[in-house]
Amino acid sequence: MIYDTIIIGNGPAGLSAAIFAARSNLKTIVIGEKLGGQASDAHLIENYPGFPSISGFELMKKFENHAKIQGVEIIYTRAQKFKKNDKKHTFTITTGDNEYETKTIILALGTTTRKLNISGETEYLGRGVSYCATCDGAFFRNKTIAVIGGGDVALSATLYLAELAKKIYLIHRRQDFRGEPIKLKKIKESKNIELVLDTVPTGITGEITVTGLKTKNLKTNQEQEIKLNGVFIEIGSTPTTVLAQELRIKLDEKGYINVDPAQHTNTPGIFAAGDITTNSNYFRQVITAAAEGSIAADSAFKFIKENSY
Ligand code: NAP
Image (cartoon, rainbow, N blue to C red):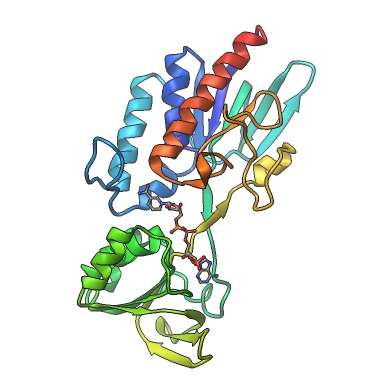
């Protein structure tokens, strides 16, 4: 069987692409490991129209359900290899033991959590170090913890954790935050959150579990060790482009897939959507990922029609 399009990634971009592709009668499957991608980890999403406040997981379940209603098959696994079949004008995607052939591909692979690369980070992973507040927050009820980062994800994580933990240090390397001002305002009003600014973490210490975080103030060079039980690292993410590199897809200098306004990559028949691309002015939201997914599906549909496959 030859599919019309195979979508790699089942976050907001991939699932939106699937809904639009299926509604254009394209024979579509989605291959992805984790439902909803990083959006599933969001404690609350409060800016997706129609849903004033919904958990990331719940919203992604709704996306998944919608795609299934349109007849899309979702395969929960990792796409491991790509091959271009030049003579047939198709691509082959390998997942473990299975191979899938398709006329077009939509890459919606999203991004991967960025690491601090400091001592103790790997050693204490799962024993006090976490990259996901909603997954691990409950382990830190009435404990003292730190959140590292100044973006939207760090601010959301801090607000979520403030409802559980006794005390939170929000550690950011600058004075200005990238995250939403409305969240920062709530943080400043909170009694159990202390801002530690112009400061970077330099090492995580512990015994069986985490017991402290070493920090350095970038203005004064003063070093200190904060006694605590957990460290949440929320310092952004980097594009997941190993598979794109395999297909020689053009990336920008930071590793995001270069796409035109119709989500075409430099390889005919391959499209990309969501956080992994250079589009939407790098404004990485569920709504922009969903929009890019819908455009990519429309472009795949037009590509198949124009090439009379
Ligand atoms: P981000 O906006 O890139 O922020 C990363 C933060 O971590 C920055 O404050 C950065 O500091 C800091 N940082 C990076 N590397 C560091 C290091 N080595 N040491 C210390 N600090 C470091 O990432 P994000 O918060 O994960 O958000 C990613 C995207 O998702 C954003 O575009 C965001 O708007 C979006 N998002 C959307 C929603 C939604 O749809 N509602 C929710 C959450 C996130 P500097 O500021 O100094 O660079």
